Image (cartoon, rainbow, N blue to C red):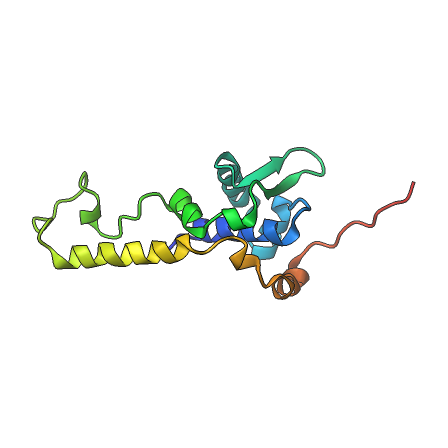
Length: 154
């Protein structure tokens, strides 16, 4: 089972939002920390926002934050959103199947069983869980973050 980098960075964006909560996270911060292009992260944040996982704030000083409590967002939900149907093998999709062994193949049944077990683990894992070691995670990304502009007193 291999997830796309799109899914990985969607999860990383949610994780960073949980770590920085309640502050806004900028797309540029995610792109810089993970060494990705800004348009790639914009696309991810847009999709996560449409799904209600993120709340986005436009304009200068904008960014994104979690749209739901981190304990309410499961990794499984995000994977289903970003990956679509997990047709690990052709015969999982009846519309595209050309295999004559459909319905009698033990291999197909076992791969389906393994896929269900994989997703069950991810359904039991939340954004809160993958952000629980907050101090360690923040220490690890600190060297990659942009320095904050000093606040001015008026």
